[in-house]
Structures are given as C-alpha cells and as structure tokens.
Length: 177
Image (cartoon, rainbow, N blue to C red; front, side, top):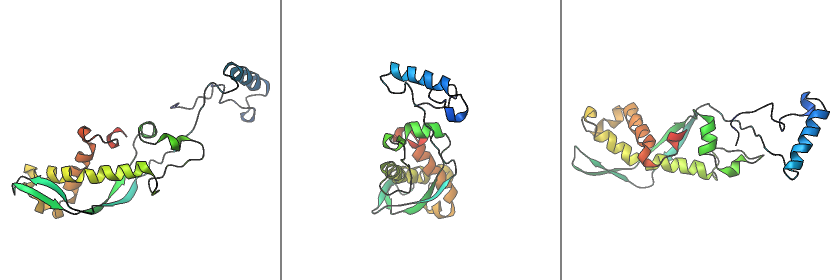
C-alpha cells in the first residue's frame, strides 16, 4: 500500500488531468502489456478523520476484580462510562488497525457500526483494561492507596486507564496509532 500520492507515477496520469492524450495512453498501455493487462501498481486515497470521536460508551455486565493494596484483598466493581478516540497517525491507523476488507473501493470503516469487528475489539480492549486501571489507581501511593478517592479524581483515574490501555504488555493495537 502506498503511503503517498505520486503524480509522476504512470497510473496517476490521465488525459483528464491535462497530461496530454498520447503520452499517458501509450506509456500506460506498454506498462499494462508488461503486467499481463493489469496495472503495475495501484494508488488509493483513504480519508481519515482526525477529529476526536467522543462518547463511546462502555459497561461491564458483571463485576471486574483487582487486588487492592489498602484493603489487602480482592475488590470488585461494575462499571459504565465513555471514552474518546483520537487518531494521531492516519497512516499507522490504516496499516495496523483497519481490516483489509475495508480497504476495498466503496467500503466505509465506521467505529459506530455494530457489525464492525475492529470497533468491537477496541471496546473489548477498553473493558479489558479496567481491572489493571483500577489496580494502578488503588495501589498508587500518591492516591493514598484508596479506591474511595476515585469519585473525586476522575482525571487521575482516566490517566490510570490510559496507562493500562497503552501498556505494551497488554497486546493492545491502540498504542500503535
């Protein structure tokens, strides 16, 4: 997959773009002849929104558990909330996360599509990171090792959740893009 549009590529030239009529047709015909009638290369344009995608809701159907250092026992909670997605590198996003079936003409990758397996994987990554995030938060000495401070410190918990999601050991594709 090409990562940049190249106007000097023979497959980019067109009689409709003012490149003349003879040169593009003859060159393209010769190149296709060399590759059995098919273009030797192909270029595609993908449009990726860099705007934040807010209010992606999540919740657990049953308790999630983590080890609490202050209580010295295992603690559980049911959760619900929302998270925001922001793509910072569209090339890495398309290469590493978007399934190949969406890279065909006419296909649209949409995080809100209920049948989108990649979006479901992302949801599972977030929910799967909740227990490590609670553990990071409740066992952080700067928080006094108290989960009870969670309601007063949503920004601190968001940081713990972000750290848990982006940890390389979690196998998350999120850190790649």
